[in-house]
Length: 230
Image (cartoon, rainbow, N blue to C red):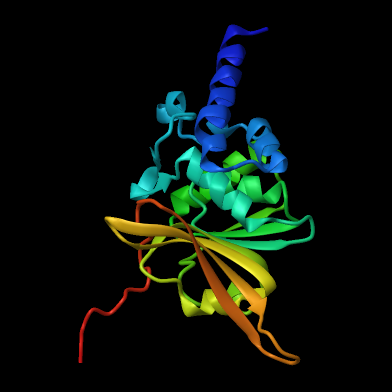
């Protein structure tokens, strides 16, 4: 066996056992996927030696890859099914889209920066993942390309002070969304679900569950909470 390959696999296994399992990521499908999809191939070459370290990694344009345990926990909470349609806001390096694409039918990931669009497309292609479409646009603003579509799952891969209302409206009945909400130093990863309200003929409702506290880089152009009092 190639010594470098053995060292990489040892580091990957250590990441899963020492970082990810302790964060209550116990779904065997998620754990197997983390072992199979080569995270290091989605990390910029200058930081590839840190691919399995418990930290965020820098990407071009001031963006970041989330820490491995955060990615894994968010993926688990989405509970993706083989026929799900998924929307991601913030493609980054394409890694989270690649993870979701291995569990779902198709993923549309929207990225603001042209350089990151090219990076994500290249990484996904090299990994043989063909059911992801990467679109260059501001994913936090309503646009006809996707804002009139419904999705079974939505992932916001970055922090927002509040979730845009139009994204909530794009969740299909039974749909799930994960996001990191708040302002530094207080941010929370949340699971948002569209659930059927009690009673015959009742409209769908929104249920939000706090998953864990964390801090990450805010997405640009995210909607702000007004702090003015009247």
